[in-house]
Image 1 (cartoon, rainbow, N blue to C red):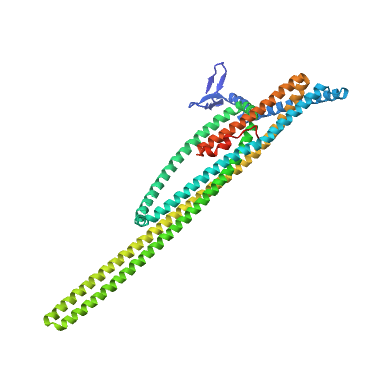
Image 2 (cartoon, one colour):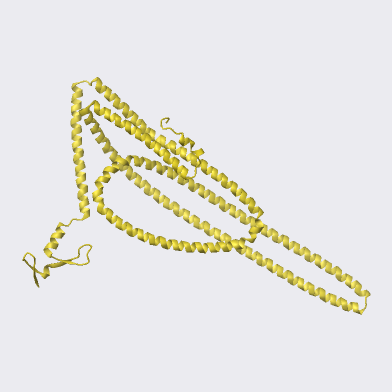
Length: 469
């Protein structure tokens, strides 16, 4: 079949291809030549990104080469000038002033880690005092609770079965809540993954446009962010290690106290059972002795009485035997009740121990999982830190080289005025660094306040002065 195009050319249907445009549910017909031309002109996003990165590398290489050429020319001119003419007194003063400011700047950089360590040390001291007070209060509460438990031990034994039932109900409710929470978490996770996929696609489209602006802004902030990040990482690792050690110690102590309490309860129940059995045996012996004495008296009286007395004796003997059988039946019932009570107590104790063992096992597994996750995070953080250090080193070398070129060119062109402006810039950097330390100190104070640390432990941080250190 033959069709005629808008231009009047003849197009065969065998040369037409169906193409589905993006965001459309209807196909469009194009010729094979148009399709081949579109494929030839199409360039992938990865190829475009490679071209952008290659152009940037070429631009940086050309800029570095030009800067190196300018620096060599300036150095050659300066060397020739110094060889032909001795430095003037003004140049000597400018050089001495520049060296003095560089020394002050280097001393301030070296002092930075010491000031941050002092602020972190004061903050950690306030945390330690707060934790110590909380531990003392917890120990006092524990002693009071033990005294109250000693007074209410009898009622506590009676509440064991009720607590076990409540514990079973709580475990069932907890299992149901965990299942529901897991279902919700899986649904949310699926939605988050879908959203992340969409966001990643959008980010890939915007990445080429934002890359240049991001690198330029990131280079200005990377040094300060890296220093704060390293200090924060060291602080978080120390706090995490201390908290993990304290948590493990408290858990072990709590488990030991629970085991001692269970053993003491079992010993008290056994002692009580022995005392009750002994009292029952003494009561039985005393009752038998009284019955024997009464029978002897009845026998003596029977010898003196007539035949009616013998009949009465037989009736009395039958009554005594009936009472004896009733007493033995009652005794057997009490013994069975005691055995059943002991069996229920043992089952309750075994169930409680099993529940505690299961909780301990689950807590141990959760702790090991958290420990493994923290280990992986730490390893990833170390790798990221190494990559960031290498990147910062390259950026610092490039920045230092550009700064040296800039200072040399500025001194050559503007002389004393350029040096004064550079001195003002260094003073501004020192003042900004001092303000940064003050902001870090107040941020640390607010963080400790949010954790519940009292003001009396924050006094050293309030009184800390940057000028004194």
